[in-house]
Length: 138
Image (cartoon, rainbow, N blue to C red; front, side, top):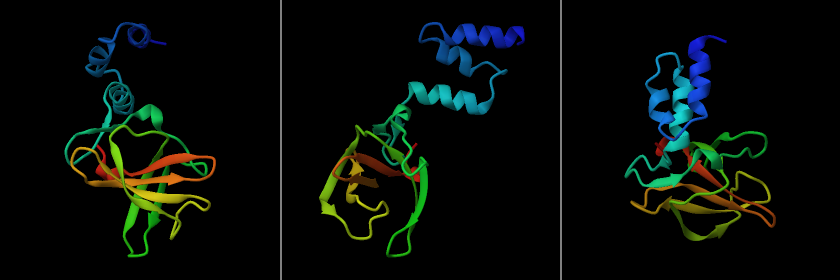
């Protein structure tokens, strides 16, 4: 490990200021910078910037976090699965029709701030998760 890498590891164990220090370090690749920034910043609604969820709430459903589905109208959605949201509210009653996850009913989820459609909450007898449209998140 190089001296620069050793210094980076030490910075990671430091105070909250480490995020801004490390983000400006030219030795850190872009993927790692995004990971660090996502730990500090919430995932937001792309339309109004309202906090919606956090990176730590990402989960895998059917062995994947990301899924691509088409609704009955032919609209394609790339969704990410989350165990919790803090910035969504539900609209309408749950439905079992055209569910993308067998055994789950769904409800539409909109942004608490601007009411943009952000995805769906999926509910079964034993599990709840949120499927959020990735291009509607920032």
